[in-house]
Length: 106
Length: 191
Image (tube, rainbow over all chains, first blue to last red; front, side, top):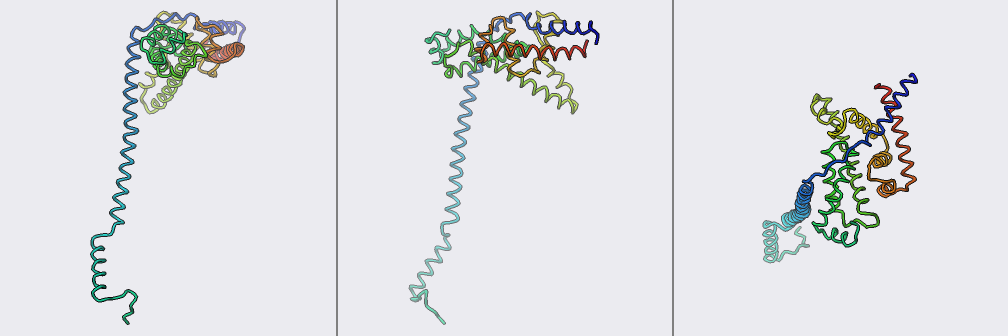
């Protein structure tokens, strides 16, 4: 690279470093206040919606799980009607024929 | 503006006080953002975000610095975040263009300095400088960019960046050295 070229590049570099110095001042936007107000209202609305979704859905999910557990307990662990009838019949027969559980019939 | 009564009214959510803040600092924030983004539309979007953030976070303002310094800090952070977001979009656009959608890449090409009062030559230099600034570490970039603001002294820059004046001077010096190196390499290939 020649000295002339190097000098030219250096000059261009220095001019580029000063490129921001000639930035004029930007003028204000007269509608900025309106835009800010609108965005704040939108954020508030979204926040309310988010809180409802977060807590409302969470509560609904907990209640649903509780309900499913309750139904499972009632359905699977409570004695069935047939079992209750059999138990009543067995005790009635025992009383009638005075059959003891430990008795050996052989 | 830093009067404790005024700050108290701002913290209580007084709209009129907030409107005064917007009126007083709008130009400052807009021009600060423009120095980072070189795109008026983006600078206006960032300015809007800055003031919404100011309103929502005013309760955390501790008054151990000036209100203007605190607003400047938010403006710098938001501007840098916007730049990073633009960079991510550009990268994504390149990936999309690999699958043949060139229109996307064209739409998201480097944000141009859209200020109408600048000559074409200076606009091109500003674009190249912005490109070179992207290659600097964040703190050097911020210090150099803020030093180009007409209304910011080194003392104010040190308040915004929460560093000593000598650190700011050192950052700006290193930024210029690195920029010279990058720009020299660029012009060596393009002249």
